[in-house]
Structure formats: C-alpha cells, structure tokens
Length: 434
Ligand SMILES: *Cc1c(COP(=O)(O)O)cnc(C)c1O
Image (cartoon, rainbow, N blue to C red):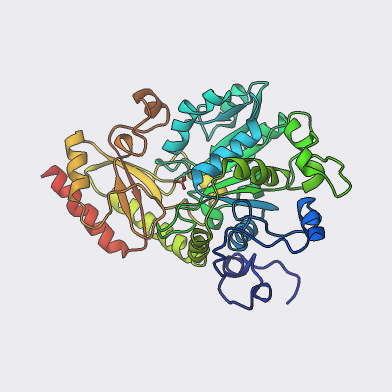
C-alpha cells in the first residue's frame, strides 16, 4: 500500500488493530482478563519505568480497550486516547485533569443535563469553579467570562436538545490567546460529522454510549488528545512537576511532560484518574463499541438524511410552532453548520407545538414507533419531553438561558424507514389536538 493516509471508512473497520499481534484473529478479541504476567523482573522494571510498553492490570490498560482507543484516535486525528467506563467519566476526568487544585472551567449553559448537574452539585465541593458564557455560537461571550484561574473552556460541538452549533475555531482562539485548552464534547457529531481537533480543539471527549456505538448496548466514554497544546506555559504545574512514580530505570524522577512527550494529558488521565478513581471500561463493552463503530458512517449518514426529511415534514405541519435543527428553514446555526458540519448536523433536534403541557404529553403518549427514552444516537428513534426529563434538574431560569422552552419535544432519529417515523409523528400530533 502507498503511504497516503487511509480514508475514514477504512480506518473505522481497520485502524488500531493488527491481527498478526493477536493470533491472526480477524475480529478484535475480547481479552477478558484482570491481569497480565510480568515475564521476568527485568521486564517488570522496564514496564514500570515506561521504557517498554506492556499490559499490567486491566483497570489501566487492556488490549481490547486499547484497540478501541487507537481506532477512535485514528478517526479523530488524535495522538492519544483513553477509554473510560462512561461519558460522564470522560467529561469529569478531562475537566478535573485540567482544573484540579482550585482552577475554573468556562463553559456554556447548552450542555448535557448530567454535565450541568455535576457542575452545580459536585465541582464546587472539589474547589473547582464553573463560569458560563451565554452563547456557544458567540466567541465574544467566552472572552468576557474568562478569569485568571480559568484552566479550560468546555463546550459541546452540537448542543442538546436544540442542535446549536459551536464556533469551535473562534472559541479555540479565545482559549489559546489565554494559554488554556479547548475541550470539546463531540458526542452528538461523532468523528464522522466533525473532527474538532482539525478546528483547533485540544481535547475531545465522547460518550460512546450514544451514536459512536449506536446500538444502545454499552455505556462507555473516551478522552482524546490532539498533541499540540503547550502544557509547559506555566498554568499547568501538574504536567511539569516531578512525580515519584515516573522514575526512570536509574531512579530519576520525571514529569508527565518528560515521560509522555506529546500525550501528557491522556497519560495523566489514565494514571491518576483512571488509576485512582477507577472508572475502567470492561473489555466486552469496548468490543461492543468497536463493533458499532464498524458501521458508524453508514448509520450516521442515514440518520442525518432521515432527520432532514423529518425536519421538513415538521415544518410543513401547521400544528408545529417551531423546529430547531440547522437544516430548518430558519436556523441561527445554519452558517456555522455549513462550515463545521458539511455532511449534516446530526440526528438529535427539537420541536415545539403551540399547546398546553397536556397536549405535549398526549403527543408523546400517542407515538407507537418512537421509544420514550433518553439514549440518543441509538438505532431506534426516540421522543422525549426534555424539560421534564433529560434537563429536568435545571431550574426554570437555567432552562430559559439554555433556550429550552417548556413545550420542547426532543427527537433522536434512528435507522427505521423514515416514512414510518413520519406517519407515527403525524398520527400522534393529530391525536394531541383531537
Ligand atoms: C450522554 C452524554 C454524556 C454522558 O455519557 P454517559 O455515557 O451516559 O455517561 C455526556 N455528554 C453528552 C453530550 C451526552 O449526550
């Protein structure tokens, strides 16, 4: 083969795995083991000094989990990756790794419900402050909300539930002008629709539970690292201080930067947060995510096409008051979507009917095909009343700031025949107004 970089669709079924290293097994084997033989004492010494790569214990490394890490790193153009037991572990380990020791995180109110809850309930108790910029599509609002202790900007590339598109390049510039990294939760887009590292993001996190695995069969997360950020700029002593466990074979202490070159961030998530807080992804779950990724492009392309048809149908239904998706006739995100999401703006979006809560409930209770559940990106379509469920812990004021109107109905479009989905919505909307 020539040296030309392989295409996305080749990488999604091949990258990060070499059969000749695994008894020529064509599919990635499930290494269902807790521990690994060290060989002899000399080898153990080299492993523990990071002079030879090898597995020690599945909490911090497993060959099946490694294949997943390397495959997603290849898809996103990342230098390093660490897989974790959930998307929440990925978000929290990445943010703690950046802001531990009294730092602050600058974010926007347009976030996954669990993330925003954790910002309110957990982070302040660990001494980490959270600040909010008002608009994820307005970089100036981030510039204004920066503080001297801010250690990272954190955003979602496509927000939940209203599919607002973030101006990643401009927000990355704000972050870099102040010597801090941009961390992007790219769960809704997946690397098929967008690679945030290409637009200047430094760290990418995923809930692989959603569209990345796509079948609603495992809980998983990942943290990826682009490799270009300057962690030695004086704001992040955790990467430059000498660490006892990072001794070389001569016994000299080293820092994360000295030991792990251009991937100190993911190495530190692995050693300190995965190692000591312990949200390890099991090999079977890693395998299920790998299996899902084999059809990532095919699934997401169909889900986007069906979503665009359903957006058009909803816009043509006179009972529907509004539809929020970048492909809608009127969308504040249309221009940013053209730049950042040329293959489509995803399959999670919201609409509203001009009606009482009773009618919203009647609509949802009348659907026959759509599942009433929360796990977006699944092969099966879902419908949910976000303000009462996925974003139910937000106060009315927080919902208003995040643009979540009380009548918001969120859809995630799966792989069913789009005509069946439209027919189901049509009869449910009629019943709601009967
Ligand atoms: C679901 C989700 C998470 C949390 O992921 P889990 O795998 O459920 O822990 C984080 N961010 C976004 C955008 C999500 O949709």
